[in-house]
Every structure is written in structure tokens, then in C-alpha cells.
Amino acid sequence: MNEYLFEVENLNVEIDSSHILKNVAFSSKSGSIICVTGVSGIGKSTLLKTIGQILKASSGHISLNGKKLDNRALNIGYVPQDHGLYSWLKVKGNIVLPCKIKKIQTDQTHYLEIVNKLGISNITNRYPANLSGGEKQRVSLARGMILNPDILLMDEAFSSLDTFSKLAAYELFLSLHKKFKPTTLLITHDLDEAIYLADTIVILTHDKCLQFDNIAKGLKKSENNYEYFYNQISSLIKGENINEKLY
Amino acid sequence: MKNCIKICASAILILLSWHFSSIMISKNMLPAPYPVIKNTVINFSGDLSIHCLYSLKRIFLGITLAASIAWPLGIVLGYFKKLDNLISPIIYILYPVPKIAFLPIFMLLFGLGDVTKIAMIFVIIFFQILVNTRDAVRVINPSLFFPLKVLGASTPQLFIHIVAPYSLPVLVSSIRIALGTGIAVLFFSETFGSQYGLGYYIMDSMMRIDYIGMFSGILILSILGLILFTLTEYTEKKLTNK
Image 1: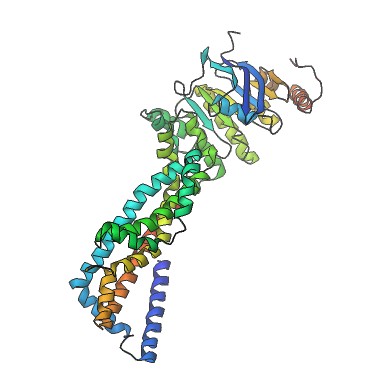
Image 2 (image 1 turned 90 degrees about the horizontal axis):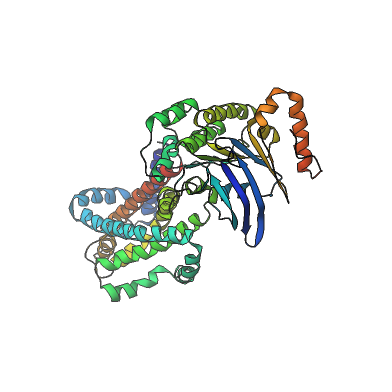
């Protein structure tokens, strides 16, 4: 148990007397990428909002490095599906806003490193309305990373991008993650995306929460494994019985 | 630039219509534009500008007072639904009442001075800003708050960084919409117990059968309205077209 430092234990969430999440439990090493997937309406976004403390859990426990999650004590970054940029602020204003919320000075070196890595240093004086979808996505990611977050929450962050922008965004995200190592929870409908990015995949079903670890290393080595894994997860989501222990 | 050309073209069209109407009617009560414009230019350096400043002061104070109360109140009501449920019935009762009906009440309460006139502009613009701001804040997409809420942002921080800037264009657009009615009511209220203001100037000129002076007042009032309307429209565009 000690090797897993990000833990969600028996998490239950009720909204208007409706049980949205039932006994959700998973854990992973801090600094890993956890992709949460499952069919629509299963509660993936609810899980993300609960971890981000936007919603309150009815019961259960979320902890990082043995300490209960507290968004005032920790830095949590959030990258929404629709970019969530503020139209009245320029790109730079959007990126550094989390620093204002936390009432801290923006670390200029860190800021420059992020905007340079994401290739948005030339658009920091523009308003979001004048950006392309890919640029908005990168700005949103920069805002999520500006505080060097302990936890990065991404709610279908790549889903609005076209295939080419998506592949570029994956690489940018992975390079940023490699450098700053935030524990990342990525909600996705896209199994390819989950398998490509994740260290751990969490699948939410109506009555279960299944976890598969060490994904990236195992899958990148062999295409056959990739297909096998993809089929196994697809079957599981469709409700077929499979052996949960895949590796 | 295009807008400027459009406004100039419209002004020329209005002046031409006015000119031909005055020729057709051929009575003192409808003077031609040229003597009116000439009289306006001559008198503006004199008492006409003082009347204009009085009206402008009343409009400015009325708008500022209304905006500084109605905008934050609209934000709070739009954000806190339970509070809105409590206050809304009062707004629904007062909002449809023709605001001109408040004039005798204000005259009795505040007398015939500036306060009554400012209060009239205040009530007209107040409800427009309050209702529009509240409605705009109500429909803010909740996901807009998430990037800041995960950081533990407090409610005042959400107000300052999201709700206020989001609803700022609504504030300006409400002022723009209410401005026309505000100026009309100001004109009306300045005809009672005033010695300064464009409403007084116009009515006083009419009583003295100085129709050129009367039209000069109307011309200045129209220009004042146009300037204020253009200013608010420009500000609104600047705030929304980013």
C-alpha cells in the first residue's frame, strides 16, 4: 500500500439523492498519469470534480502522499475540455491567473519555460478569441501547469482537437509531464489516448472500478499487446466478463 | 471610420428633411436648420453650454449611482440563487412600473432641486442594470469557475476574477439601452421647478416664442444623446470584441 501515494478510497458521491459514484477506489504512484475512462454518464467528470474539491464526496477518502487532499494546501491544475479560457484576459493574464488566486508572485523562469516549451511565447499578448483550437489548448495546459501543480486534472482535454493537433498536444503534454511530474488524472473517452498516455488506466463501470497499471511501458514495446489490451478493455466496457489480471 | 461616414450621411439626410419641411410648412415654429445651427454655435459659448453641463452632470451622477449599486447587487443576486428568490418578487413588482410615475413622489420627497432629477435617471437605469446583470450572471457556464475553484479560490476571488469582468459588457449595454429613456425623463423632469438644464432651456425658449432657441436646445440634447450613445456602444464593443 505504501508504494501508492495517490489514493482514492471508497469514494461515494450523491447529487440530489442520486448515487453518481459508488465505492470508487484506485491508487497510483504520485507523479503518474492516470487515465479514467468509461461510458458516458458513468461519473468520470464527477470523479474529477470531487478530486478537485468542486464537488463534495458523501463519503470516502482522497489522499496524496498520505495526506488528505486539500486544495488550499496543494496546487491543483485544471484543464477543461472547452479550454475554459477567460475572454477578457490576454493569454498571459489567463496563464498567470492561478498565481493571483494563490496570492504568489509568478515565477518568471517557470513561466517562460512553460510558454516556450508549449510554443506559445509569441501569442501571449493576444485574446483567446484570436487563437486556434490547438493554441487555446496549449494556453489552457500552460495555465494548469503554471503553479507546478501537485495534481493536474484534465477533463477530456484533448477531445476537441483534430487528429494532427492531438498528436502534437500529446507530445507536448508528455514532455511537460516528464519535466514537472504532476500526478495527472485525465478523463477520456478515447481508449487509444488512454493507452498511449497512461501509466495507470482506471475504468469506471456501473458496479466496479477497475485499475490497470504499468500501461505505457508494456504497450509501447509490442503492437500485439496493444491490440490485445485494447480489445480486453473494450470488452470490459461492453460488460463482458474477462480476466481482470491482464499482465 | 465607416460608422463616422454613416452618422454624417444620416445627419445630412435629417438636416435636408428638416430644411425642406421648414420650407413647406413655412411657419416660425419650424425654423430652417441654418439659423438654428448658427444660433447654437453663438449661444453655446454663453448660457447654452451651462444648461448642457447641468444636464450632463445629472445624467452622469444618475448613471454612476445606479451602476455602483445595481451592478454589484445584480452580481450577488445572479450568483446566490436563494437570495435572488427572496429579492426577485420585489424587483418583479417595481421593474414594470413606468418610472415617470416616480416623479411626483421624488418631487415631494426631495423637492425641486437636482436630487429629484438624478433620482429619476437613477431609477430608470438601476432596474435595467440590475435585471440584465443578474440574468447574465445566472447563465455563466459553471465550468468557467472550475479552474479557479480547484485552487481553493474564495467567493470574492471568483467575483473579482470571473463574475465582474464577465458581466461588465452587460453593464455597459444596459446603460446604453436605458440612456434614451433616461434623457427623455431628464428633459421632462427639468421642465419642473428648474432654472438650469436643457429641458428648462427648451421649454423656456418655447414660452418666450424663441423657436430658434428652442430648436438649439433640442439640437444640443440630440447631440448629447448621440455622444453618450456612441461612447457606450464603443466601450461595449471594446469589451466584447476581444
